[in-house]
Length: 192
Ligand code: 5GP
Image 1 (cartoon, helix red, strand yellow):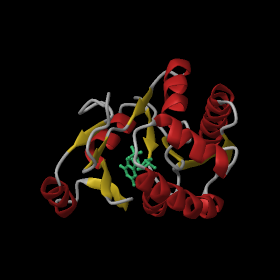
Image 2: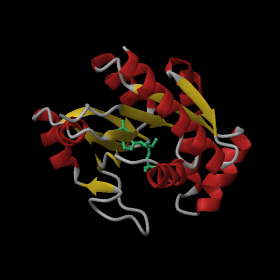
Image 3: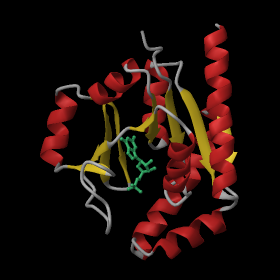
Image 4: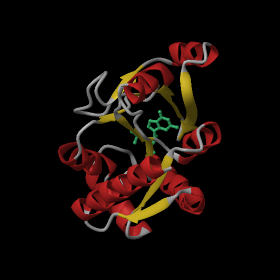
């Protein structure tokens, strides 16, 4: 029988380099899979439906909430995001570690239901650096960037509820640190 995988939440204000971290972790680790969320946000250039997100409308999102299809869901800067439950459990049961890239309200919902979840918060080196990265990405209007910066400040406050806080100074280093945290966590779990 496969050992059940570990549920890993990596939470960070958007623009913190999470997608690069994920990419590097995928290269480094066996049996790690990314949970594709559903969102009502419109796709950004280059985003692929079913790969980056399931892009759905509000009506479908509300129906999924009603049918209890989400492990957690939350609203973030005017859009809804949710983690499809069945897909996550199927992967965990198959022995995969499942990586959730979600914001803090959703992270807290999962921690309450599943306290064994490994919770990692990624910090940008500074607020100035975060703003610089959001502007450099060139995908959001000034107003959206302002909203995301405000949200980021609230999220920093909540980093205290996470098991680990990793500073994303150099993205490769941050990814390596996260990978080591996962190894240690799995090792500890196997001992218990
Ligand atoms: P973005 O619009 O930049 O892709 O994501 C905005 C925020 O929503 C990010 O902090 C991201 O981690 C979070 N997010 C993405 N998917 C989910 C989800 O399924 N649930 C929750 N709660 N947050 C999500």
